[in-house]
Image (tube, rainbow, N blue to C red):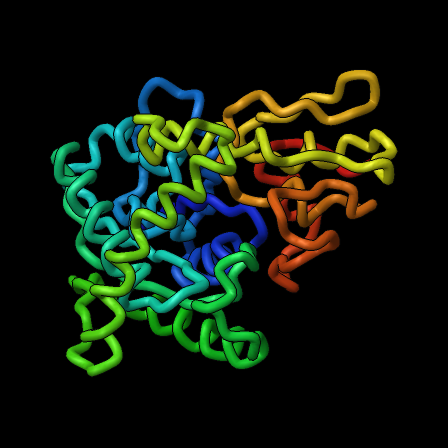
Length: 292
């Protein structure tokens, strides 16, 4: 059975996972951002993978570009579709509701999400520190094992649904996450510099969050941010990056800036996190850009 693994990644987690699964299943990797401009997307393979990061599961969880990708899918009704959601928080309360929404979105396209998986990896947004673990090495080891297990399961055509384990931890965490919903809405509006009573939804606010991203005096106009941006949201004007309100909040521009000149919101300067196995060349390859 032929495979295509579609992925979206900003700081490398989902790219690293997609690479492992594609290699293990003999599949072809395709960047979701690289096909985003197409009017319709018709996968040729029999087995389709969708690998993506979780964004604010309390509000939606699915990055806008991934939502649009799913809406453009055609001819996927008889395909075996699996999804892997990478997340920095707790899988049971981040990935599970996100995958549930993806399942519904695919269903509207006449397709079925046959298998759902999640992998926890370090978070690239340090503002939400209370849901993070800082033992990155342990997370990387576990993700290696889990990616290999997922590859075996999808190769066998297993049908699986993510389910919430009945633990005391999850019993308390789910209500708490729901209570935090308003906090995340307010935070997103603040990043987008929208009024507190703005009626804009999650997928309308995310693109506007670049209003809170800026380049400091260390910027030398190298254009790396332009190249690594997966949705071509950045252009260089007079040697400075200018953002055009199509942001995916993926942090690629921040984390791959060689001068550490780009900063977002109120987080302290400097590189926060990117996957150690993912290079600048890996990020550029998906868009056809070149380093240098």
